[in-house]
Image 1 (spheres, rainbow over the protein chains, first blue to last red):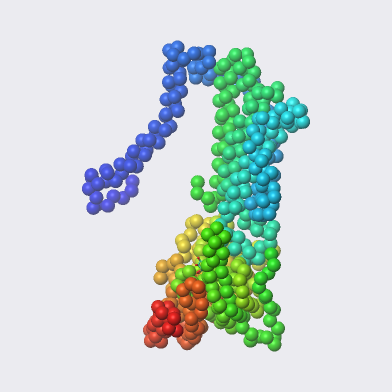
Image 2: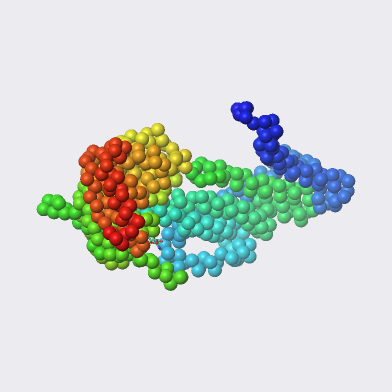
Length: 271
Length: 267
Ligand SMILES: Nc1ncnc2c1ncn2[C@@H]1O[C@H](COP(=O)(O)OP(=O)(O)O)[C@@H](O)[C@H]1O
Ligand SMILES: [Mg+2]
């Protein structure tokens, strides 16, 4: 308990603490509101208010999920999707960050190469999937490439804006301390851009799962996207929902992991 | 980037040449969007002897920072001459917070050394000395966001001292501090200066601070900044920043500088 100054009356104290009490209540409510949605869904399904063929009850989906866990049938799909996202993500993120740093630091390079990237960026990645399948085949390579392209642009733009927003004072400090161009790049531009880089990494993780789901619908024999698509085609709606929940959870956990990394590597930024 | 400044290595014969020579320095900024020209500094000439402590006072916006940034080669002059006779480039303490937030206090102080590939052991030794000198030993591993404003300024001062350059440029380093902390840091700075023999150019908008620290005070007029006076500060060294306020000459000089600042035209 915190110490209470004797000069405050009971009423003053109550009013003083009221906002904090309300805040606690809201926080509690925020945990339960998603559950409420599930409950409504369950009820409307049980009472036949919604079409059970399209929206099976959450309890039915949970049963299906449990059976699939016991039969290990999902794990290969999870592994395939994770591998594609992991490799494609790394292939896109590393060059994206490096190019972002270069474009952010060098005005001439930005002026010359910037328009090329601006022109390519708006092309929907899914729209060029057929082209990528044509070039890289239906194997994993095409998945790596389409994810890498999506990730590359997000990392490029976030890193570049992070570098360009670096306060001039840090550049002045580097120059006065006698930093070379490369040292300014590594010791100033990169750390200054790290918060933006992490914003990019989180956005890119989200969009990687969107891209991989779509890519696996069309051109794969494994992966959660393939599993969702195959379930739909056989009208196994409960299984399809399990797939949707699994891929959502994968995305969520990836972002949690990135946030943990961010706290570890960007301890100076406000979280 | 081409060096705009001429840094001349002193030969024994030139030992008593001034460390800094500024002649008819003019600097203007052009804002192309509003098609507006701001003359920040106009025809400023002064020189600073080697080992001298010079303060520049003037109202804010009169071009003090601009002069210092030109001396540090962070800004290009428009015309005039700027010569530094020094074996090393000048070290700068910036007006605004300039500690790097991603480095610890120790790493911030060691930053200039780490760029030059000085050995880890040597860096550690230098940093340990400077932490002690600036009273930051207990915060060696802290990050800047855990420090008060005064502590951050101490870090900047320590960083400017770490690679022992001949010329120290300080831009209102204590401007944002409370009077108590400022007094402590002024005393520390005088002690450091007395033991190292550096050439110091110290900017302040505080007449009091200028008289406390300097051998000579340069007074600048409001924009466009020009020099309106160059005053000797006669107090003996070493100085006690509190005791010197008992000296009547301190207040006479204070009055004189205030007269100049109030009506520079009559100087
Ligand atoms: N980079 C800049 N661009 C445009 N104007 C500037 C710039 N830097 C300084 N100035 C102008 O030059 C004048 C002097 O500024 P400054 O040297 O910072 O003054 P002081 O340090 O004495 O307060 C001010 O009017 C300021 O607005
Ligand atoms: Mg200034």
